Image 1 (tube, rainbow, N blue to C red):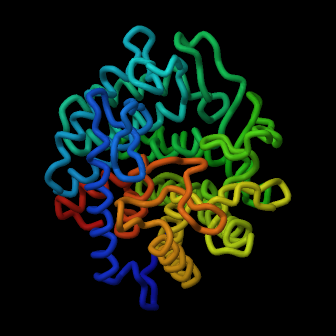
Image 2: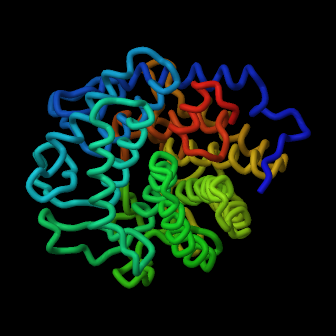
Length: 419
C-alpha cells in the first residue's frame, strides 16, 4: 500500500490550512468544557449552557473523554482533569457494578437499564485514548471494557457485534445494526494500537467484510443499516420514524463516508502490522465515497448532504446534519492521502467551504448541529450542541496518517516520532 503526496497544490499541505484547522479545534474544545456534570458530561444547548435538567449520559461522557484525551495528548493544558473526570464517571456511576457493562445514563436515571453495543464501543474507545494519555484508572477501565466486548457483544460466529441486552444479559435484542458495528470498527482499530493485539484488526476486517463488502456492495455501495438477528436486511425498519437519530429509515450517506474512511484506516493498519490485506478495501472506500456523493449531495436542489435516502435513492429526511459533513470531509482527506487523486481535493474543499458558511457558529460558539432543507439552523433531530467528537476529529484527521489510530498517532507526533 502506498500513500501519495499530491502533485498539485493541496490544502492538506498548506500551513495556513493546518493553522486554520488547529484554531477551529481550540474553539470547539473551549466550548465543550462547559459540559461537565458531577457524574460525567451532559448535553449543551445552542448557547453552550447545561439545561437545568441535564443528565450525565454515557455516550457523551465517553466521547468527551476520548476527545479531551486527544487534546491532552497534544500538549494542550486544561484537559487532564477533564479526562480523569470522564474515566472516574465511566468507572463509577455509569457502570453497572452488579451485572457489568454500562448504562445509557448515570445510575440509569432515565429508567433504561439495557446494555447497548453502540455505547460500549465508545466506552472502550474513551478508555483506549485515556491509556494513550497516561491517565490514572485508564488501564482498569480499558480491561473492563474489553472483557465486556469479548464476553457479551462479540459474536465469533457472526464476525460482528450483537446489538443489545437487558440488564443481566439474559435477553438479547433480535436486531443487528450497522451503526454499532461501524463504531466497533473504529474502536477495534484503536484497541489494536493500544494492546498490540492483532485480533482486533482481524475482527474489524470481519465486520467490514459483512457490512460493506457484502451488504453495501450489493446495494450500490449505499450502507444497509438494519438487520434481523440472522443478518437479513430490514428495509422497512423505522419507516414510520424516518428521522430517528440513531436508527433512521433507509440509507444514511453520512455513514457511507464514515465507513469509507474506516476502510482506509483498516487497510493502513493491517499493512503496518504486516498482515495480509485485501485490495478491495481501497476500492470499496472509493465506491462508497463516489456513490454517497452522487446520491447525497445537492440532490434536492440546495447545497449540502441530506440525512437519509429511501431505497430508490430519493431524499427522505432532507435536513443537513453537521456530523455527516464532518465525516464527508474526513473521508475526502483520507482518500486524497491514499490515492493522490485531485477529485478528492475538490470535494475536501467543497465540504469545508460548506461547513464554514453554514455550520460553524462564530457568534454562539461550536457548530450548528443541524440545518433545515433550506440550510437554516434547526433543532428537529438534534437540539442543542452536545457533540464535540465529530467536528473535533474532522479538524484532526487531515493532519494525521491513515495509521495508527488518532490518539496513538497524536502521541507519536507529540513525542517527535515521524508519522
